[in-house]
Image (cartoon, rainbow, N blue to C red; front, side, top):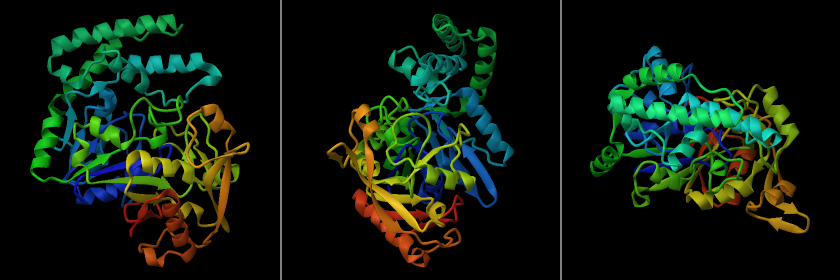
Length: 422
């Protein structure tokens, strides 16, 4: 496998956790390089479901080392809860999980600020997960954030935390929101910090030593391309770089050490939160929600659904340098007599083959569709590409052609075993 980056090619929730889990069989190290507990990867192994928010999916493989890189914002309380959840499930991450000493932290006051700012925006809200990610990245950029390495010096960490609480409470007061309890915040955070000390490491050095030793690394993206702070549908985006470039800056591994980029997309399109989504279609949404599908792993919110948007995935291929495409959720379309693909946008007399940057223009865009015959046969028990219905195979290859990439994986269900390699 060599060194591989895996990214979402849509608005997140593409099924990356499942594809990452499948690929970790050939990886020595799995690296999470950006985002925070606002992301959720759902992995099903046998009859057991795991939902991971911060810890890389590779933790489910006993021989795999997992790294949370410098580009991630880490909720120490949430990370301890996740570790305890794994221990309860019989998975011990000690010695296999390492957290960058340069990764910034998310505290309860960041979550309070997140909620207060969303409330202030009213109808113009972004639709965040309320996990405090934006305020934590804001502190990082403002150069007042606390990094994981600071917990190794308890006295200094306590002093810095007190300053952070005072600063946040002043902002909460200005926003008309209730301040957080300094005592409760200190107690909960310091308790978590004590538990996390053994996991903190210089992961930059660790990864470069691993590369020199010819270890195979898999970089696990969170969210999706169009939630990227620079390349997404701004301002309805997250606060980090979710594209392949973000995997490099968030881990300390240069682009020259990356061998391939795998993009993950659903066989249709989904989105959580606000912002334009040209191929959104209530028929698709009703179908998938009626099947009990498309609810957020982190928020539990009902996802917005629509037909496959080749415009967005085409652009994602360009931005990320995607070499291989993994298409998930083929089985979600099994019952349809006809399947549509948005191949372009049209606003008035103008046609767009890539997303317009101006959100007002994007909001006016209507999808230009091509229709494909459905396969109307169940695919969830199929394990070989040649055994898929002909129309399902034609549809998958059409998606690859329309987006300028090569189809490498096809997923027909959430379980590890329901993954087809081409």
